[in-house]
Image (cartoon, rainbow, N blue to C red; front, top):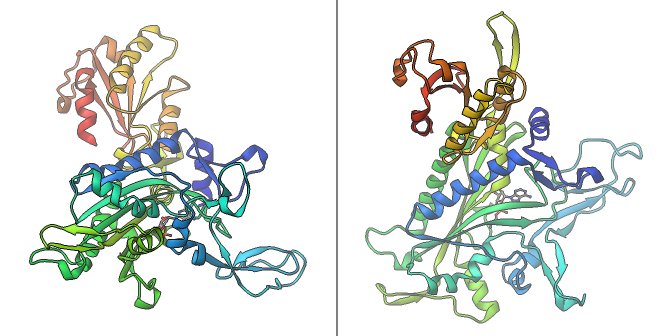
Amino acid sequence: MGKIVALCKRRGFIYPSSEIYGGINGFWDYGPLGAELKRNLRDAWWRAMVHERTDVAGLDASIIMHPKIWEASGHVESFQDPLVDCKKCKGRWRADQLPETKCPQGGPHDYTEARPFNLMFKTSVGPVEESASISYLRPETAQAIFVQFLNVLNTTRLKVPFGIAQIGKAFRNEINPRNFTFRSREFEQMELEFFVKPDAFVREGERTVAQWHEYWVEERFRWYESIGLPRAKLHPRVYEKKELAHYASACTDIEFDFPFGRQELEGIAARGDFDLSQHQKFSGQKMEYFDEEAKARYIPHVIEPSAGLDRTVLALLCHAYDEETVTDEKGQSETRVVMRFAPRIAPIKVAVFPLLKNKEVLVTKAQAVFRLLQKHFVCQWDDRGNIGKRYRYQDEQGTPWCVTIDFETLEGAKADAPEFGVKAGDKETVTVRDRDSMKQVRVRISELVTEISKRF
Ligand code: GAP
């Protein structure tokens, strides 16, 4: 983990928030590469959950909402962790995550009884600070989906079963943020609320609530594989009956093998009609759906796949990190650090280099190639230092392909490259170097976009 955290800082994936002021515990900033990586992941989730389906619509709701929502959802009353203090050093911990260290005041810590600590961040809305103006930063994105259920239903042509998807910030005043970004106080969630018929209305050939739950667990495993996390590192954790919230009929977590242990990436819960019913009760608005086929009104049940965007970024960083020993032609060995991201989520897809930065003809040609590729892929220009160093730099960023414009581009290829239809003497070709195999091949500039697209 130490190496991964250091690489994230050194290369601009993730920085501590407010670092020049000494940082602030539980908050992180994504640097240039991290911002691209996170965006690719967000887009991949949205594409799979919204664009590639006909039964899901998107939502982008406000972070601060009516405070009654959090009463209805149960968060005001019970979104809490047990907190203990040390009477000697005044340190505070979650009662189930006590430190192994000794008390700085000497000897073991002297703990108080555990007491409940609500994890919601309070804020006040408007210019007058009074109890009536208290609201909260949302601790999950899900509730906005439930409270907009009727609006989405009435403004789309969707029919049950259908889903509403949202990606956005959530805030929890975690007692002990830890494991880098894994448990933060500000993070992003990617949540789907998928509304289904209660079992009493399910007809022959339709899925029951339990079958929809199974369906979504499998869909979500497949999505993690599609972004490059192998099945072997992903594990279902099926909740036992006694672990479930009173309204839930099932919950399966998808856990990932992080360097600090097997931990939750996502939870897929069957929440019954709890949330819609609670909002019906607290708002006085009917949250029912009229099922034309069944000629009946009911409150739909919900299956909720709820994933953490930051946690998934962390899983990708952990899985991608690799070190290998490479030996050059002179027999010198060195350690190569390489981020083996799946190309579709890699922050930068192609790096473009002129072999030498002080040869104008090379630079001009390389600029033309850069402009050509930039229309299709996220590209990076680099003309600093020797080519070997530039490759290593791109390896640490996880760039799958490097394109070099060299003298052969202008004077003609030295050898045939039959695989790519290049003959010795052909001009207008470039070197394409592959991050994983480190193999270099000659490709025609006119074929570059097709060749690179093929490799995704
Ligand atoms: N609406 C259901 C819900 O919020 P949750 O298990 O509390 O369920 C869902 O959160 C996901 O959000 C988790 O699986 C995790 O990926 C992410 N998450 C929760 N708390 C987090 C935190 N403090 N830091 C980073 N990610 C967090």
